[in-house]
Image 1 (spheres, rainbow, N blue to C red):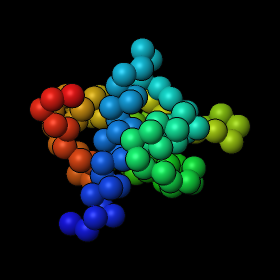
Image 2: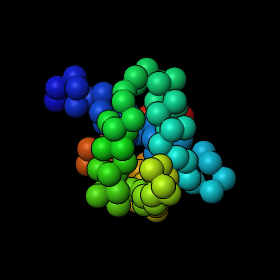
Image 3: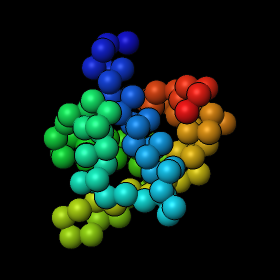
Length: 98
């Protein structure tokens, strides 16, 4: 696995974990971009949007667009990955200690 792939898979896990922390399991792309930056993933908004689309394609999130903003909502498959019940291809595995 290339280092870039490793970073991308880790960023997707960060997104899923952050969504799982929310009361309604939802966040918009602007907040997710800031969260990723906090975890050392300094990427463009378009890159974050691409990752949200990938997560939607594998059934981990649902995306709603409001105006020009994407809102991601965690789905059962995404929560199951965060909880280590299943493994989603293309997303880093969560560690045993959260």
